[in-house]
Length: 414
Ligand code: GUN
Ligand code: ZN
Image 1 (cartoon, rainbow, N blue to C red):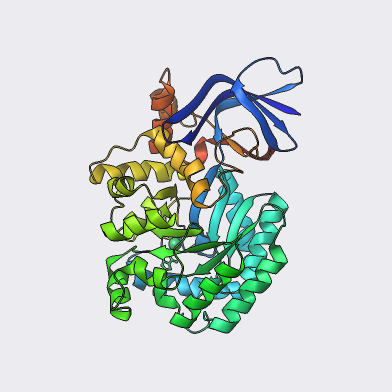
Image 2 (cartoon, protein in one colour):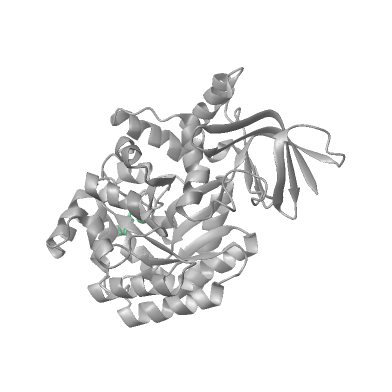
């Protein structure tokens, strides 16, 4: 058994804040056996210096876009053509994919992210490279080969090859480490009707896999979708008609949603990945948290690298706060922490395993340093936990991550 002592904070549900200023976390075989106020456990104790929170969970990110972060000058469709598709072509090469996967996962750990739902590319080897690297590190990573038979030349599969390659990857990786598979049609515009139907068949054939795509992100995109699918009620309805809207579906963005579409999302049990830095960077729009709250749709946080501008979910929460301010909603820092941990876990269907440091969950956690910079040290001196957490979200990033633990083992230290 391992015992950890320090200030511990977790938010398993919105409004359920568990804060132990002097806490004890007990871990056996990588699993939390108890988390509460400190009492002598009768075994050697490791001190955690800072505020310990559950590992961050990124519910939408693209690893092949790591090197294209901060690419200037375009909105979504032009940005994809000019910056992203050329970069993704390089992932036909396994060595390139392996090198970027290793850098990417190390960057997640440096930022305190222990689980993620990750876009690869159209190439099966891009998924193999990521899963191999995640297995080595013992990270909880969910990913899948991107389906895009209407993609640009060199970045296209077919409905048949997309189906067969996805099946092969599911068979190859099922049950290994903490990996999971997501059927991943890029978005409505890069798949034919035939391929969207194949994606639905994959989901039906494999009850343990997720469906991961983009929805209602950018006005230019939405206009082209409406042109191609004139009979659909809205963008969500396009996916719905192919059987792609259900409790295992994760939709990135959902910035421009009708009340009908939000209601349908709630009814279906589908989840949203809110990606504020990406939505600001591409000029996509401001996510409407109040609309989401009216319907109670499952909600998590995503960085959406490379349209997103930071790997840090702390920084992403600071930007989420600003987006909500522009919508007239004040995002509470405890609620924000919930969204980037247990909220994302629920969206990904792994809330029984990670996200809240509850007994029975895997012991993935991060030690945050509220004095990571001279300014943070001044701002947080003598502050309440609420105030410290908010300052960490607005002023913090990878510099504030003192250590990251996976299943109770140190995986990164600053
Ligand atoms: N929609 C389709 N592909 C992408 C992508 O790679 N990034 C973002 N942000 N939106 C998309
Ligand atoms: Zn994305």
